[in-house]
Length: 212
Image (cartoon, rainbow, N blue to C red; front, side, top):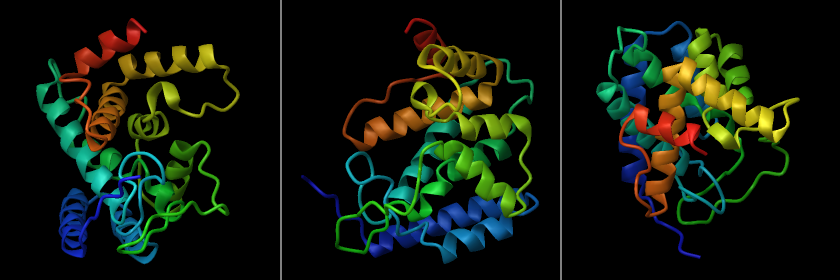
């Protein structure tokens, strides 16, 4: 297994960028969220043990890369009509995986391990629960974007596979913010594994999932 080394300097730079951008939103409750991230190891945690960004600082790096991807997809979005504001892109891209904060602890120079005390099933919903408990105000579009950010791989309570697939496709079309975060998460994860980015535009993503 090839474990990527991510330096402490890289982690600190990533942390500075995330804090600056999120603080700049001035969203109610954001300071509580930033404190929670610092106090609970968000910037040292891995994003996984076996898959993308499985190294020290991987969770923060993945979150930053999802933001870059989402911001680019948002800028290319046709007929936006201010339905999606960049603030929503920042909030959902950086915080969609906040519930993984203690799931994959990692020390610098060591491999991450899975914390078996943490249940990450329905992790999009768990991220929303954490954010709302910290007083962060989320609108319904932002909640959907975080809840369904894994697209077809989302753990869907009380839905079978066919129902979950229909639901996520409908959400991606009805709520472009959610579709953008789904596509951005997929793009960032693929590129972190050395693969090609999958979607150049939101419309590419919608066409693809409608044809699955």
